[in-house]
Amino acid sequence: MSSSSPAPESPRVITALHGGVGMLVAVWGAGLPVLDARVDLGPTRLGFLLLALALGAAIAMPLAGHLAHRWSDAAVLRVALPTAALLLAAIGAMRAAEPIIALAGVFGLCCGAINVGLTSRATAAERAAGRPVIARMHGFWTLGAVLGSSALATALRAGGASLLLLPAAALSAGAILTLLALRLPVGRTGTDPGDTADQDASPGPTRAANPVLLGAGAVAAAAFVVEGAATDWAGIHTTRVLGAEPAAGATMYAVFFAAMTAVRFAGDRLRDIVAAPILVAAAAGVTMLGFVLVLLSPVVPEESRVVVATGGWALAGAGTALVWPIVIGSLGATRIDPRRLSLVTTIGYLGGFVGPVLIGGLAAGVGLAGAMVLPAVLTVLLAVAAPPLVSRLLRPAQTRPLSSPIATPRRTPCTHPSRSTCPKHA
Image (tube, rainbow, N blue to C red; front, top):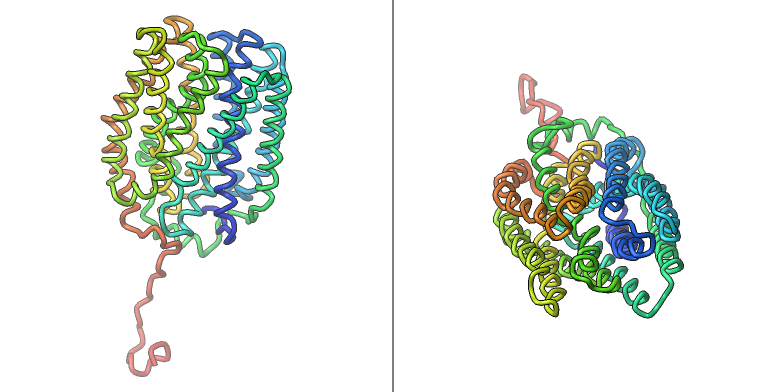
């Protein structure tokens, strides 16, 4: 069973939570170039750091799905959000690489739980609204990332001390998120008889793992590899490959998410008027063009390198903006429960966590500029594989209106000898 129906005010709260989580993640992504400059992480240790983050998230997401089903996704968020903020504040105050890597694994546990909790809440809110709203929620996530990274970049350019700025930003975002999480209604998400009938009648995926769910996760994972490349490596690419200052690295992160935000705010309208397979194919093409520019940026004239890379990351952000909203929106229409939703979430978000690790491994061997070939190749695969996979994924949802929260009960045939004298039909 999916989470209990949200209270009337909770869609606004869920949207605000997406924005707050975007601000918190911005402290991590935009702060990585600062941490790299402070403790000299380098590509190899950055790879280990991101691997610790990925392992933590991989462990947490399936567990969080079971906890959300048994108790509540709101309960999961109330624990994971403040814990993540405290851990990120500690990481921002570190002066050595080894404790940063160790804490990154625990931070990954919290990130995995947050991803599952937010996804479960968002799909429930879209069903309750009866129309597409998930892209807008994710638009607020990226808006939070833009605002957070831009504020951090501005403070760094003004000469602020990173040892104070990073912890202060993490704790401020954590306080806001904790207050918002306390406003979410908590309801046990165990199965009851009414929901059993509904699930039996649902045309959506019913097994813990099947080709539809695995395909959905694979499509999302490819997009999240690209997003993870921007989150964890765009800033480092700007500083180490293009030779720009750390503040410019934080700005590049903001550019990527600004483009993603603009597309996501228009995304629900696009989902209404453009077929999902066509939309995914177009998005992959735009992303591919973006990575062509990123790959070309180190070889253009020096004065144009940052400009070309900025255009590339902007196109990559615009191209990847709607893949995840399309995937989880269509799954939400089938009333998928948090446990099965966590499978798709785990596969998808692992692309975002593991992709940067693979880029780090490649960077250690062929350099960071060459390592950007990996997300570029994945955009080609996304353009080829995503449209048929999304068509298969959306097929069950198209048999049921988005706004139908409960299946129509089956009528029992009348067996009375005379319908005219039957008490039920009198």
